[in-house]
Image (cartoon, rainbow, N blue to C red; front, top):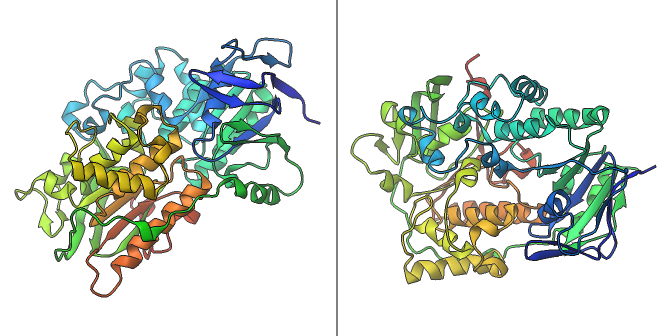
Length: 487
């Protein structure tokens, strides 16, 4: 029997200048529930309304348990809500060992507001090692997510809202998170998950609430086979890309290249902490690699060496585009040939402007650039807007987009050059099921085009994901860092 926790009574639920249609008058039950829908459908808005929208305009949100509820919502970007954390400069700064002295450690951040030992204990239950002395910008995306969940649990809220909790977690970490969520029942903590992939509906959920086009639909009770329920939700994610409309790039990079990126006995480290003693890896033209390894294994750091973000590249035996690193090349010579997206870029990204402007800035190779785009660059961004069906958000400020909308904008930003090397580090973060499928098809199209005899569009690929079902079919090589990690 399902026991109610919160009654959403109003026909319309408002937050800021947006609203949700609640004509079905949804009830959020006790235990674990899931709100599911495509990107931009209103899931995160629902979480904001439940957490902060009481008595806002005409909202009527009633507790069903006879007391005022304590509610906490957690999403990836909330790391900046911890006191002492500032995004400014951290993306560029995180690899500069001499510039990190003022960046706080985990203990210095959480000691201000939380009982550190309890937070660390929850982190351990979520599969995080002892991170108390680790500088905050050295945490992997998975470690950051688990730290946020741990700090939210310290107050034992009545309802914990988790916005896309599984993204960025390896399989072991996903299982640990599930175990931790199940254990919350003993603490009388209820959970509402906001997800955009039916495969993320856990079998222990009691209710699924579909959210489509800013409308809450009638909740579906979880009974019987979980696979059947997941399949029944797939119709919500109808999205496709017509690759025949792919714009021609403004410039074509078809100069012969032997070695795209080469590492010879290269150590991988965060600051002064060595994760891997030695990596030997060569990526040649038109090769497509999956880069694998558990959370915290150094994947993003290794990629930062290829994208010329990490000054350690000057101290290591690294070759990029047939040239030994540190022999007089400009970082812009490297970046103009690379398209790159990573969880850290999304976390620390400070780009300003509209969605179309952010996409266009991918043509000028900088993060958060204030360089004014040229007319042909604006036009090229507009073609990508139409290709990806983003017309409805093209002129919206980037910082007000939903998490999934921001992710697809950053993906377009990485791809707009149709670069010689495409680095996709967890590119499906926050994308709904339909958009994951469509973007994977687009990557496969790039690869198939590059393999055509006499193609003018060669492309190498490095792809990072913890979900094998998200790997494009064009992947034909694997680099696994787990076998190299220092023990």
